[in-house]
Length: 482
Image (cartoon, rainbow, N blue to C red; front, top):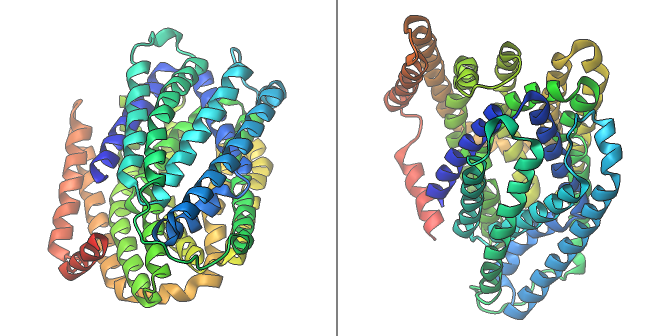
């Protein structure tokens, strides 16, 4: 699973480089706008099915009788298919109005193409949710990697001067449809191999709806005011070219954040902790394990965030990205530290999820509503600086609320403050050495030499300061094996 995650990360980076170098600024802005709009459509149209699967499918997988598990799996599949079909049809009918409101330049993607893109993308993502919730992480990563490799292979055959956003979407549709066909046997096999002996269900189906709908309401508040909505506001107010500039800078930062351990294994960690909690593991033990995982994540973030700020402009130049590179670099420096805030938010959300605290999740998500409003009010006069203000509030607002409701659980992390300080000290020393390397080395290899010096310094400092006791690694490894 880890190997496939890393391979998928490399393929995804290559895909982003190809898009930045082959699409014009206007078409790249249109493509980022389509992705944001489709992402928003998927979350709004779920009607709670994703929240239900995240929280209850892990318990069903280890506790429910086989027949009951099959019925509930079939029910959520029908549930999602119906909502996806309605969302795709609505998308098809409203596409001309949407394209005009967002200032999309010609040629824009055809409504029929967007209909199939919404349908195929949503179905494959839901299959990934099911596989993750039932602890089939390796199979899920096979799908992700195969899809990424397939669309990268296709886009390499396109003629660079004539690539349009619609070409990229067609590639996505074809590759995703093939992955869906290949994943159906996995779901059939999953439903016939429930691992545990039959046991009575701890909670009737009707009793699960309260948490499901509260979680969906929280998701709806969050997803209708998240980064995708901010991108749509940028497109509508500042135009597709501005969205291309912001979207590419954000994509690099988001890419680093998405592949930090806590985010990359978010679903798996949540499913694992949920199963352990349902099986009676004490909350103090779960808090200790979550604290250790958060510190591992901090070690990654402390390396990636300064690297983006130091080497961001050189990375953009190596990608042959179109647009204002100086402005993109400024955005990279301003957005990179958000990974630290995202780490805290994920941990607090997991604790609220384990405690079925839908009220905390709902109130935290309500705080994100201010983010797109800030962008809408500030960006006409402040430009992309107003967009940055909305991005920061998007992460800080929910953290304030979750700390108020679930901050007591973070007291168990107090044993990790020494570890965190050593990680940050290592990152600071590496950043100083990396900056000296950039100022000293010349030539086409200067960026890579400086980056190598940065990473070597960081790893060496971690080796000297030893922020992670070996006993913690052994304890986590034994729990995962069990």
